[in-house]
Image (cartoon, rainbow, N blue to C red; front, side, top):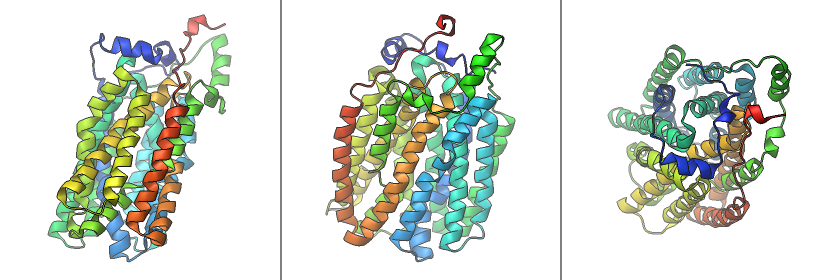
Length: 431
């Protein structure tokens, strides 16, 4: 199956138009999105099984401080930013986003081998960096493949389907880690072996099954325009609304605490056994799985910006509930539900919104720009929260983070209030 990336703009309509049409055009899932979802599902089993034990492995098994974990979690959140835009540009320039995505999945697979031998702070930091750089390489090209394969009227819903499949793996990975630790106390190395096996499967499925969607070459005088279009530049940031989106995403990312810290706060408050820790990741991802498609569909109907902002309000409620002096099962479950809803309302919705605000020919680059801003800002947030926790304690640190997030949500509501998806001209109308 071959779809021109340069032709995608001809299918784009203003968000209001899409909302009206989405109720009239039947939803059909592209096989490309299905297979990409399966690849992401298997890969997330690999990555999330490690992520679920990493906070305990670093602070408990290795005996490092919360500052050290904050640094590693910051890498986990933001190292991918180093290559996201370059990978998106390479996907647009080559016209073969699958090949760029495959390189990213392959690098993450190789990094998994390092966990079998690492045993100190710097080794763990280097391996996490390699793994996250692989994620940075693959994410924008993969999302570009989803965007060009989806029905324009159901773009956020298509991303929601992919994120749903992705989060089946994200829920299964921690569950596998839980059973391993239940049967083998301190069986971290066994989790690392299982993680590597699933990473190999994901790379194999992508390489052998997912079709190579490529851009058709432009001809005649359009070739010269095409070369100018694919020359790397920051001109896409001048698109109406995209600059506002990047500012808003960065501001919110600066006050988005990593999941590992939230779970450590819950574990410290309720003092439950460490082998139950991976189930916190399972709970969040199950909620994400349940809400991904409904919230994606809602975003297509009522608008992506309101859903995106509402997701961060759910995150604010998560912080406040985690900082509450009372604990117990239901308080923990409430945190997991709110956190899962936050991801369902923001992850795929942000990619869908960025793709609508990006000009044709720079689809992966535009998506990567949004993801880069989020990754960098969350990296700083994790490192800062680790220091804040060390200085004032977990509950106070969560309250401070919640107050800052509340201010950011209000600011973003004003920043994005005037943002609109600009109509894209048909190629035949261009002078």
